[in-house]
Image (cartoon, rainbow, N blue to C red):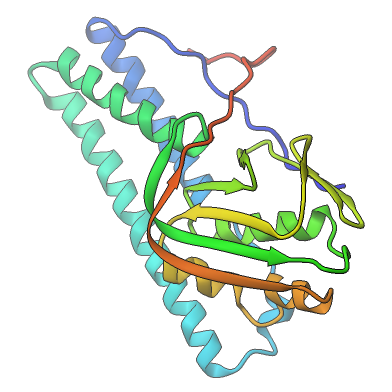
Length: 240
């Protein structure tokens, strides 16, 4: 059984006047930390990397550098947005525009909104029914680690609390039954996602060892229309 730890989500508040702008600045700061946490989830592959060729290591380093550049740009954009909120003469209008943009971005990350963009379609075969829930979770984790911003596994939109269970061909994701071959859609840099899944000793090797295959199709446009609901927190609430 493989589980991910659920993430708490702040309640929504209306933004009015200077107090609303100040509150939004705090929310944006929180979202900056959230974005960093989502994008920089690291996989422990030290043992696997030690046996790679120089060309493979250079390719992995290039992908990591590209992800770091993208993350730095996100940080810069958020910092600029905070500066706009502090300096603009029309703070209420700026706050509303920024709140709308951040709500859309967070909705995509949490899986509550449809998403479109470049990415990959991954097909995983398992003719012997030897893959288990942890193996399928590894596919998702590799995609996330490579910067995937939206993922659909079968007919389920993957979120921060998604879990894979089962073995021997009887597998589920968030309680929905899965049937091989498994199809995964992911939005992000297609080349980076492809490379991450095919790192020597990674998830593709695991699938092949089980008698199956993992095939990645790089696409200019991936449309993920499936969404998920987010439960209202029972205990956590914003701290003021």
